[in-house]
Image (cartoon, rainbow, N blue to C red; front, side):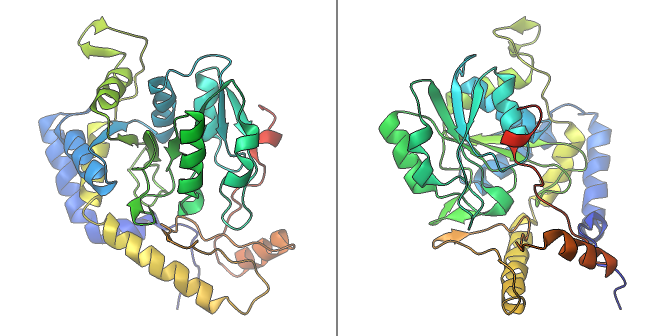
Length: 322
């Protein structure tokens, strides 16, 4: 009998692939390819194919990836980037790092994603990009957002940090904007054993510039074309992720099956349950329910040994830093 249901059990995921992981790490150590290197390059190829894109560029974190995404769009100080207030703060950090202003658009309470019906009213002459989030693994409503962006001449950056393998009307998340940012934080559906991130895109020029920006703005060592960053992925993380790429499709199917099963079993309770919009397949990164007595339910679950958490207790527009 299970005494406790953990909120996240990374050891359980690692156990069946431990031999593969150990072998990949040992090979990486033998090669001494600690920064970027062949493991990262192979992972980039595999992840690009997984996301339905021609290019993937690996970074040391999802935050770094989003920062570089806005650099690729040449967002300038004082520009505005429209996004959601209900996400992890890294979405806004990327905007602040380029000294632009985040403009928050309220969410659709059913999906928790940016509401496209409220988007156009937030666009001003200073708006230079739109950066919605596929929150909890559920795709945002892509088509109406892309249509507004096309009409207004604005690029869309997908924040796909939580949505590895999700699909929208048959299209893979990460393949629909100008570029998309992913996180491989250990708790993500596709997680490194440390930090990691990536951008996906179909434009080879953007991919080349992203690779330069992650390596101090350099394409030839010790020659720097623009101000860049030390945002390289570690070789060991590339080795780990390369192994996990063999399993992520199956892990996603299991998550989808479990998420839908939860909905069946909890259907009779007075809870607002998550759902998948028509044409969408969620990656089910998190299973989020709503109830007026949220805190009491959380305490009850914890006392029963069921792990749970709040995502997120305070939206970005109410954070002290903003």
